[in-house]
Length: 299
Image 1: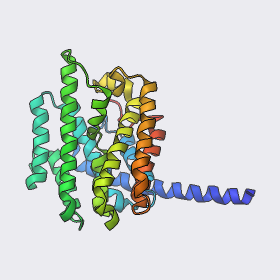
Image 2: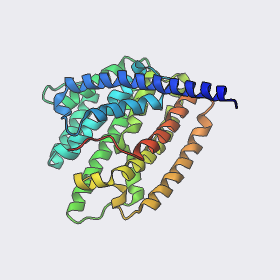
Image 3: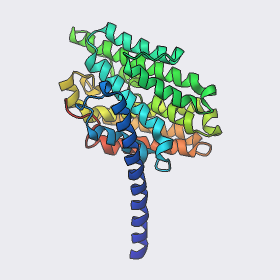
Image 4: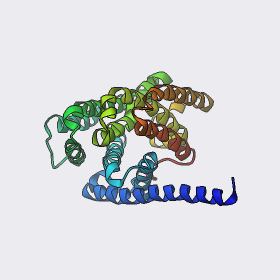
């Protein structure tokens, strides 16, 4: 390859990065507007500027072919998940409070109610209303609602594990912990994204894509845990490294899970190339991102 050819390749690669960065900048502004609309949900600590930027960048580089408008539902859903995670893990002081948050969120989905004293539900209603504008929502809205319920149930289950452990009860096994990876929320983001922008082939294969997304979600759960162990200890969170599992075993499990992801994704590659690339890029991007930092700011 000539020097000139290398220069062209670098220019093109940088152009693609610049495009994704620009989309992320547009998306970050939208996320800041969402946070400004619901200030009770997003205190400056730990919702610092870097968190909004990181969410926007993750989706922009995960789907570099997409516009900011196309990624808006994914970004907003991800931000909402950070808000519910914060409320359940750090604001709620009892199981009754946790159950109340979960139940009120589910009522938003069931009957569309907006309660002025429940901004988390109002933000969720905004997301649901935007999803409902997509033609596919009439067909796939129940799938989205089921995914949301899975995530909230998994968050509640982890809250129970953490609380019981403080009283001396045993922690889950690594397998049980990974079976609860719906609490990570990336599959809810993915389903939201596909309902808004997926083509007929993707919608027809949504169940298979969800299965692949769930496997990717397990990978992301473990990558996150490798990056956040010290913070999780300080904040009282649960982490795979607290389950009697060493880093080497977790890294090995990640490798096995990635192989499983590839096996699930390969048959979809011809019919759903963008969805497959999107899930593959989630893995690669997260490997790079969590190898250095995580999303949360300091308390």
